[in-house]
Amino acid sequence: MLPSQQLQNYIFFCNMLLMASLLLLVLPYIYLSRHLLTKAALSQQSAGGDNGAACVRSSLTFTGKNRMGLKYEVDSNPLMGTTSPKICWLLSYPNSGTSFTMKLVGHASNRTVATNYGLECGFDEKGELVPLYPDSPNGPFLNHPEKGLPDNYILTKTHCGGRCNDCGPSAYIETKESFMFMCSNGARVTSWNSTKVNVNYDPKLAQRAIHLVRNPFNNIVSNFHLERHEKSKKKRSEWLDKYSNDSEGFRRWCHDIDTKYAKEERASRLIPSKVIEIFQLVPCHKAFYAFAQWHNLAIRAIDDLGLPSLLVYYEKYETDFNGTVDEIFHFLELSNVGDITQFIAGKDYMGYFSTSEVEAARDLMELISDRQTWDIIQRYFE
Image (cartoon, rainbow, N blue to C red; front, top):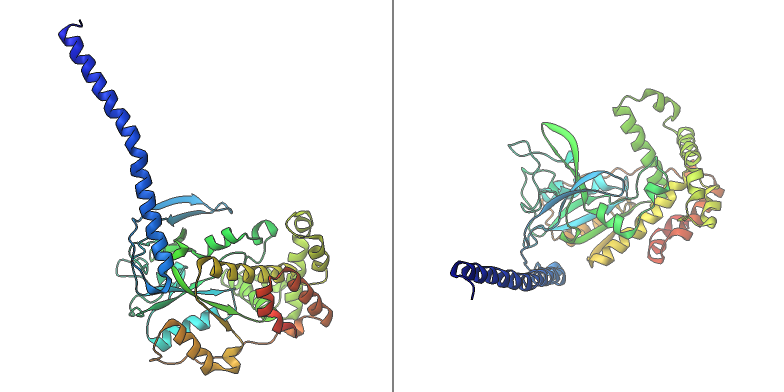
C-alpha cells in the first residue's frame, strides 16, 4: 500500500488527468456548436435577403494586408440584425455618373447617402466618421450625418477594384474574390488626421445594388480628366503641361501608359495572345480591358450575393431623366420630397478615336466581356 500522502497525491493527479481529458473531449463540441449557430444565423440572414430577417453576430476587427500589400482593418463579424436602412450599393466604374447619382438621391430625398470612402464624409462632434451601423465601424460611412437616415435602403457608393490608371496587369487584373473584397473596401479618417486607414466590412451587408453604366469611350476620357484634376491639386505643372486637356494630351497619356506596361502585359500568362494582338490597335487598351473586366465582375458580385439589382445607363439621364429618377427612387423605396439636381450632360469624346480604333476597341471588349456584360455595352458600338 502507498503511504497516505502519496495516495492523496496519486488520487489528485488522477482527478486532474480525468478533468483534462474530459475538457479535451468537450471543447470540440463547444466550438462546433458555436460554428453551426453562426453558420445558421448567416444562412438565415442570407435567405432573408430583402425581408430583413434579424441575426446577431459578435463584432470582431482584425488587421492584415491585401494582395497589393496595403494594410487594412476588417470587420469580420458585424452586427447583421440591423434591418433598416439596408445597404444598396451603387456599383460604378469611376466617372460613370457616380457623383451625380449620389447628389441626386441625397438632395431629392432629403436623406443622407453613404460611402465606403471616408474622405467624402462629414464628421460627428468628436471629429470622427459616423458608420451606418454602430457594430460595423469600418463602414460604410454616412456622407451627411446631420441628415436623417432613409427608412428602407441607403444608397452606398463603391467602385470595387481593378480601376487603377497608371498600372500593369499585376494590379489591374482581378479575380472575383479580390474584386468582391474591394467592393466593401474603403478608408477611415478623422477630422484631425486625413491619413487614410484602409478598412473593410462584410460584403454580405449589401442587400441591393444599382449598377451604373456609361459609354466606355466617354468614361475612359473622363478618367483622364480626373487624373489631370488630381495632378492639378498636387500642382504637378510638368505633368499637366505634358498631357494637355485635349485629344492630343489624352492620346499622349495613353501612349505612354501603353508603352510603360507593354512588356509586363506580353509576359503575363493571364492575358491571351489574341488580346495582346488587339492591344496594339487600341489607345489606352488597358482602360478598355479594365472597363470590360470591371462590369464582368460587378455582375458576378451581384449574382454571388443574390442581390436584387437595377441597371441604370448614364445616358438615360439625358434621354429620359424623369423616368430614370422614378426608377431609382422606386428601387430604393424612397420618397422624392426635395430639390431635383439638374443634369448637365457630359461631353461626347468619340472624336478622340479613329474609326479603326473604335472597331478594334469593339473587338477587344467583345472578346473580354461575358455574355451579360456584352449585352449591356454592345449598344455603344452600334
